[in-house]
Image 1 (cartoon, one colour):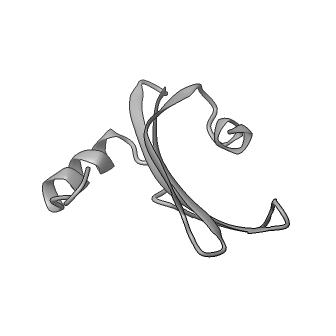
Image 2: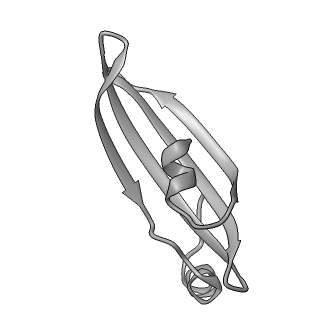
Length: 84
Protein backbone atom coordinates (compact mmCIF):
# COMPACT_ATOMS: atom_id res chain seq x y z
CA UNK A 1 0.00 0.00 0.00
CA UNK A 2 2.85 2.40 0.78
CA UNK A 3 4.32 1.88 -2.69
CA UNK A 4 1.00 2.76 -4.30
CA UNK A 5 0.52 5.86 -2.16
CA UNK A 6 4.07 7.05 -2.75
CA UNK A 7 3.71 6.60 -6.52
CA UNK A 8 1.19 9.40 -7.02
CA UNK A 9 1.22 12.98 -5.73
CA UNK A 10 -2.43 13.02 -4.61
CA UNK A 11 -4.65 10.63 -2.72
CA UNK A 12 -6.43 8.06 -4.85
CA UNK A 13 -8.78 5.13 -4.56
CA UNK A 14 -8.33 1.52 -5.45
CA UNK A 15 -11.60 0.94 -7.29
CA UNK A 16 -11.11 -2.73 -8.17
CA UNK A 17 -8.71 -5.47 -7.12
CA UNK A 18 -8.20 -9.22 -7.02
CA UNK A 19 -5.62 -11.63 -5.67
CA UNK A 20 -4.99 -15.16 -6.94
CA UNK A 21 -2.69 -17.81 -5.51
CA UNK A 22 0.04 -19.31 -7.68
CA UNK A 23 2.24 -22.33 -7.18
CA UNK A 24 5.03 -20.14 -5.76
CA UNK A 25 3.11 -17.24 -4.22
CA UNK A 26 0.34 -15.01 -5.55
CA UNK A 27 -0.70 -12.44 -8.16
CA UNK A 28 -2.29 -9.16 -7.12
CA UNK A 29 -4.08 -6.90 -9.63
CA UNK A 30 -5.64 -3.52 -8.95
CA UNK A 31 -6.86 -0.38 -10.64
CA UNK A 32 -6.48 3.04 -9.15
CA UNK A 33 -8.16 6.36 -9.84
CA UNK A 34 -7.14 9.79 -8.58
CA UNK A 35 -7.64 13.49 -9.33
CA UNK A 36 -4.63 15.66 -10.19
CA UNK A 37 -4.09 18.91 -12.10
CA UNK A 38 -7.79 19.22 -12.94
CA UNK A 39 -8.09 15.73 -14.46
CA UNK A 40 -9.22 12.27 -13.40
CA UNK A 41 -6.37 9.78 -13.83
CA UNK A 42 -6.30 5.99 -14.10
CA UNK A 43 -3.73 3.20 -13.80
CA UNK A 44 -3.96 -0.59 -13.64
CA UNK A 45 -1.19 -2.72 -12.16
CA UNK A 46 -0.44 -6.38 -11.73
CA UNK A 47 2.14 -7.74 -9.30
CA UNK A 48 3.51 -11.26 -9.14
CA UNK A 49 5.02 -12.20 -5.80
CA UNK A 50 7.08 -15.32 -5.17
CA UNK A 51 7.05 -16.32 -1.51
CA UNK A 52 9.85 -18.22 0.25
CA UNK A 53 9.66 -19.11 3.95
CA UNK A 54 6.66 -16.81 4.45
CA UNK A 55 8.29 -13.70 2.93
CA UNK A 56 8.18 -12.16 -0.53
CA UNK A 57 11.39 -13.26 -2.24
CA UNK A 58 10.73 -11.82 -5.70
CA UNK A 59 8.39 -9.12 -6.94
CA UNK A 60 7.50 -8.27 -10.53
CA UNK A 61 5.27 -5.29 -11.34
CA UNK A 62 3.46 -4.53 -14.60
CA UNK A 63 1.67 -1.18 -15.00
CA UNK A 64 -0.33 0.52 -17.75
CA UNK A 65 1.28 3.82 -16.80
CA UNK A 66 -0.73 6.83 -15.66
CA UNK A 67 -3.53 7.64 -18.10
CA UNK A 68 -5.01 11.13 -18.30
CA UNK A 69 -8.60 11.67 -19.46
CA UNK A 70 -7.64 11.87 -23.16
CA UNK A 71 -5.80 8.53 -23.02
CA UNK A 72 -8.74 6.90 -21.23
CA UNK A 73 -11.15 8.09 -23.95
CA UNK A 74 -8.78 6.89 -26.67
CA UNK A 75 -8.55 3.45 -25.09
CA UNK A 76 -12.33 3.18 -24.56
CA UNK A 77 -12.94 3.99 -28.25
CA UNK A 78 -10.37 1.45 -29.49
CA UNK A 79 -10.75 -1.53 -27.15
CA UNK A 80 -13.66 -3.61 -25.89
CA UNK A 81 -12.64 -5.29 -22.65
CA UNK A 82 -13.85 -8.79 -21.83
CA UNK A 83 -13.78 -7.85 -18.17
CA UNK A 84 -13.58 -4.15 -17.17
